[in-house]
Length: 169
Length: 100
Image (cartoon, rainbow over all chains, first blue to last red; front, side, top):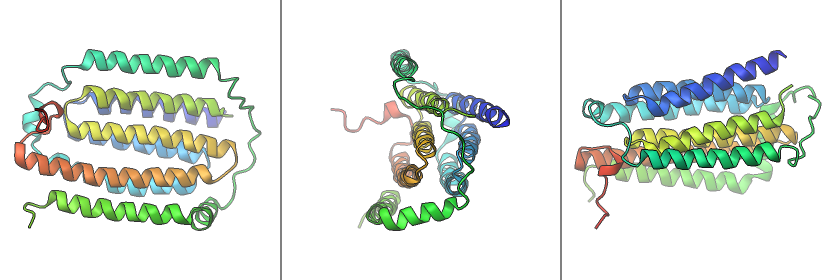
């Protein structure tokens, strides 16, 4: 019961702050609300017994990526964009598309929730060493994907530096 | 007792909000933030099924998704800075250098 209540509170906070992210005029406010959203996603991870992912979410997303966002938002001119229109010209069409997509997804999920065949599994006690299990999987079964991800990060780092450089030699 | 379906519905809601943000906003920074929302919706779903199948694979894939999000944020923000330096704007509908 307490679990369900926590889930409902986290979901409401997450969805409301996500809506605030995409509607605020000031991009700094959007970043702040995005941080609230990411915290509640972290809470959902905790509910799902993914303690390691919770820590990664807080350290990497909230601590790393969001600070990067905040830097760039404050680097580019926010005073000008405060006076401009928030939404693009095509927003009615875009909203219609999104509502249609929501309708299709909701219809499919609602009608086939039984077809998914997900009987409620009894909650076993949480695995004691989540971090150990994730580490074992990462460095045994997923060795090659980890290497590929590290190459991806290297490429992204070089790309970001090249792009932000003032003049290419 | 939280059913797996609830997590899927929550992920769908977050995904749709992200899609609306990507499609309607003009500010490129907000579009990037909406992409982060979409990636988090994916993570919620992965985690739900990881918990359902009592397998750690979903969490491993969520780590890869977070890695991608970090790479995307770095490159995307680098692009925005480079573009702002040249054109003094961050509006998606004014970025039309490739339009003929």
